[in-house]
Length: 588
Image (cartoon, helix red, strand yellow):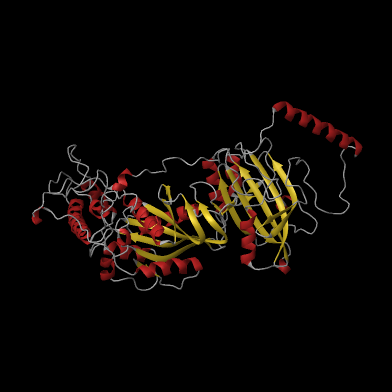
C-alpha cells in the first residue's frame, strides 16, 4: 500500500488512518493500492466532503475519515438518514461526527462527482467511483458487520481486516464494467488532474503496487469505448463444472491476488490497449484480430468465500499461485468466468425502510422523544395508539377547558408584562414547551419560541423559496433555543421541513447546503424574538440532516457578537442542534 501525504496531515483521524497504512508498508504483500491525501473542502465553513483518494488497478474510490468524538459504542450505518451509536446496554443516539453532521454519505457523493468532473476535464474516463467511510474513534462494532451499504458505499473501521475488506469491496464496485485496468501513466495523470502537490511517485513504485506499465494514458474516451467492445466476456459453456480441483463448488476463498495473475493481467491489458488504439484509428468494420478478453477477470479473480472476501495479502493462504497453463503440462484452463463484481447486487438484499419499524425505539432525541419525555415523535407507529372513543373524549375535554379559560381571560387577550419569551400565536401544537430545558451532551438548551405551519410558502428565501414554491412542504415545525456555551450566550434555530417524499427531501437538503442558495427562514428572520435574544442570526454556523421525508436545518449564532466564543464551539452547537426537538406536526 503506497500512502501519499504530500502536505502535513491536519486531523487526528487522518494521522490515525495514514499511520495504519504506513504500518502495512509498500508493495502488494498486504494490499496493492495507492492512497493519496487529497482533502476536498466545501464552503466557507470548511466542511470536509472527503479526505483521500484510493487508486487500485480496478478503479478509483473517494475516502472520508469520519472522526467519532465524545461517543463510544456500536455504530449503525444506513444508506438513508442519520447514523446512530449505542454503548453496550445503552440507548441509541444520533452519531456526532467531527465537523458536524451524523452521516458522511452526502458529502462523499459530492466528492465522487467532483473527482469525476476533474478527471474528465483532464481527458480521463474514471468509470464507476466507489465511496469508502473509515470510522475513527471509540467504535466497538459496526452494523452491518461487513460495512456494505450497497450502491458503492462501504464503511470500515481502523481494524486491519475491516479496512482491507472495505478497500476490497470498493475495488470490486469500481471494477464492474471496467474494460481496462488503470496503468502507471493513467494513475500519474489522475494524480496530476487532482492536483497532488509536489512530485508524484515513480513508475517503479506504481509497478510495485500492481499497476501495469504503460508510457501512454490509456483511459481516454476514444480508447475506452473500443476496449469495452473487445472486453465482452465469452459465454461460459454450460458443461463447464463450477468446482476446481480440490475445492467444493463455488468455494474459491483461497484465490489470492498473486503476482502471476497480475503479470498475466498486465500483459493482457497492454495487448488490449494496443489493439484498442488500432481499432480507434482504423475505419469502421469487423476486426477478427481484436483480443476478446476482460482485463478485470484475471486480476480480480473468482468470488472469494465469506472468510476472506478476496482481500489477499495478510489473510490469503500462503504459497498459492495462479494455476499454470498448458505450457506447464497442465490441462488448458476453463473459459474465463465473468468477474465476480458483475453478480454483486447494486443495493442491499433487504432494502432499508424509510422509517423505523414499530418495534424499535426512536433512534435519538433528534428523531424521537426528548430526554424529558416530550418532543418530535415520528409517525411510524412507535408511540402508543389510544382507542378512538377515548381520544374523542379527551379532545372534547380539552376544547371545553380551552373555551372556559378563554372566557375567564376576557377573550384570550394576554400581555407579556415581563417582556419574557412567549409562544408564537397560533401554535397550539404540543411541546417542546416554552421554557423547557433539553440537555444535549452536557449543555442545557432552553426553548424560547416554537411555531408550526402547514405550508412553507412565505417561510423561505432565495433559491430554496423557489424550490418550495414548486413543491410545497406538507408541514414546517420550528423552534428557537438559547444556551450558554463557554460563558457566552448562544441562540439556536431548528427548522424541520416535511416534504411529500424522501427523494424530494434529499433534493431540498442538497440545495439548502449549497452556499448562496438561500434557506428556510428562521423565526428571528420573521420577527419572533425573546427576552435577551438577538434580532437576527449573525455569522451563524450550519448543520443539516435528512431522515425519510423530513429535513432538519440548524443555524447557531452567538447572541452577543461582542462576547462571542470560538467558531469550533459554535459549530458543535450547530451539530448538537440536530438533536433538539421541535413541535410535532398536527396528526403526527
